[in-house]
Amino acid sequence: MTTVEIGAAHVMVEDVVAVARGDAAAAVAPAVAERLRKAREVLDRVAAAGQRIYGLNTGLGANLGTSVEGDVATFQRQLLHGRSGAVGAPLPVETVRAAMFARAAMLSRGGSGISPDVFEALVAALNAKIHPVMPSIGSIGAGDLVLMAALARCLIGEGEAEFSGERLPAAEALARVGLAPAKLAPKDGLSLINSSAVSTGAAALAVADALSVFSQQQQAAALTMAAWGANNSILDPRLQDARPAPGQAEAAAQLRDLLGEEAGPPAALQDPLSIRCIPSIHGALIEAINQARRVVELELNASADNPLVLAEDGLVLSTGNFHTPALALAFETLGLAVAQAAAASAARFIQLTGSGRSGLPKYLSPVGGASAGFVPLQKTVTAILAAIRHKANPVVLDFLPVSEGVEDHATQTPLAITKCAKMIALWRRLVAFELMAAAQAADLRGHQSLAAGTLAVHAAVRALVATLREDRPLGIDAEKLYAALSSGKWQA
Image (cartoon, rainbow, N blue to C red; front, side):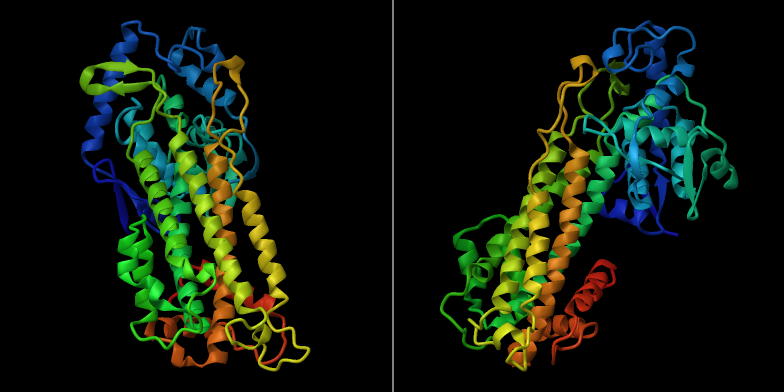
């Protein structure tokens, strides 16, 4: 089993994926134990001196002005019960694992003041593959408290957990792997839940998926260009230098590698914009993915707690660090960039399967006449694009003041990330359609138009989907290709 270390090196998107979707375990850097001990010591000392500390000796939200009387440790369990208001279908296990890993990475920075043994309980549950059953609806992006309450309750042996594909009481799941329920000290409950770990973990998975689909989109676009007989001069490095837009030179260079240096005479002086402007469209997408990565990794490596323990200064201060407007905006932008790339892919599909503008047979049918060829799939492609466009509408301003107006701003980060992830999945479907059409076009035009890179892409398609020789149910082929693209095993 491989391990991913937290608490020392910069945690990356790939680390989240390795733990959430792979077999990697979380390893804690040696420095973390002392970091947590110092922060806890400061928190206990400041609380003992009588300072009002949010969520430790005060209520939450609108109850901020209410002092916690009696056993402040017992209040942490009450706090969790009061925030357990999430509903809806449970989040997928990979998303829950991503959230658990993200929270552990954040806590390892030391700003929460969490008790070291509670931190260790979180890491142990993650590595033992004990996953809380976490309902999916309840966070508006002002921290994911209502969702994260399921995790905290699981660690203390309450609620339900998933283990080895079985849903069972959390206490039983912990017992099966020899773990005892955690005991919460003052503020520990709040430290576990007062973060955007669900949003950040899901965001990391979405970035990984966007990178995967982008690579496949580049392959599809290159195969389209080759089969279309496109004017490859649009990829000339001097053109990219003349307008050094973010990501454009990188996109063009990748396409040149796939298409090779040799190309026949172009079919036309200028191709439709969905082909001629691929470097610009894909360059903007590269930049949007990179920005999303930057913001996600900032969250993974930050102390975003409220209140925040500044151990070196001996202070506990209230913050707004849990708020994630930059994360929400990055994924709204990524969604729009995905939608642009998807629209161009759909346009190329319709060009390839249309009336024969490029000299290819009508509808990419080798028999002609009344053969439908690929043209009925234009409706399916349009339906997919419509679903993407619908999800591209922003949600960051869709909130109402809650908690008697104390919490009067929200980011809707989890919703922005969720809809972006769904757009990425739909976009992959369009890539599958473009690959199918481009491979058929290459067969009809002749493989002399293909270089080593595009030949490899064509071969990968043909390993799954045969050339169309007469009308057949192409939706089945599209599903087969989409499954291969989604499997993580696609190679071309």
